[in-house]
Image (tube, rainbow, N blue to C red; front, side, top):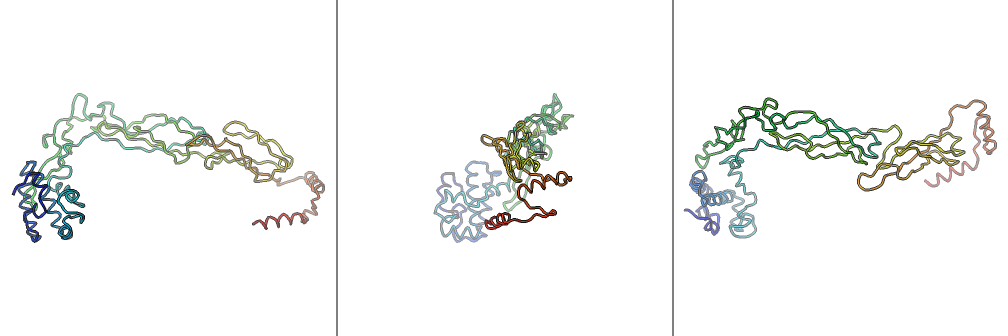
Length: 385
């Protein structure tokens, strides 16, 4: 029984498509499918109507040969269990593996034609180290990259200059060869990539000597990248088209540059703020002083007020790291560390004892007499915990 496209769309059920009754056994359904597939297979019957019919027959068999799908179909009229009818979503069939069945006959990609030798190159990743100053302001960095570049001799053609690829005699330029195999449908034809041309449809009989027929070679090249201000360790910069050249002169992949920021002898970065520790003598902390500090923006004068204690922080606004996304910069935070002298000569000890006496600090034979004021401060601190 033959149907055209319009008649196929009007068939009332999968049973009609296979020409069996709803009471047919699984063996009867299988036998009907094999009989129809032998006459409708594209290798046997290349007509457009036959191809449409073959799809419908295969889909009907896929539904009715599965006991669970058949039970749902018999109950609802649709293998999806939604609505009646052969068309629409029911025809598409959730889980319908027509492409898998088609590949069984023709091989995966059997109708796609010859493959192209030209392919995109791989992406590449390199690591670059910069100083903290460069992270604050940005820098142009010159790089030397070992990568694949288009062969300068054949210009990516893979052939010796003056020659070109020739059509494969085995597959006739299709990139595929067919062979007959036996299956439940009888003898059918399958397609596979040609082993002679590797599916390309052409062979290179006289390859380029420099690249050995690859169309690319390994080489070192130089490039300059702009590292933006505000980058941190782990930041990656993408350079489109600066990766490895593809085979046969294919487009290059992308180059990713991962930034590594060196530690600085003076400054520590936290977010976009910079931190530094400034050591000052005990006398300077008591009397107050001005200290010159070398920053990435030049010399800055730090005003140390009289009576400064260890741990106090002086903030210099806008002298930190430039914000990578947005405007402005972080701050520079200077942590003050008051240094107490470890060794004193006799004259210095006498002077300090005189100072302690003037300040009412009782020091007897090297021991400090605790005063009520000291205990009061300690009590206040403990009370706030």
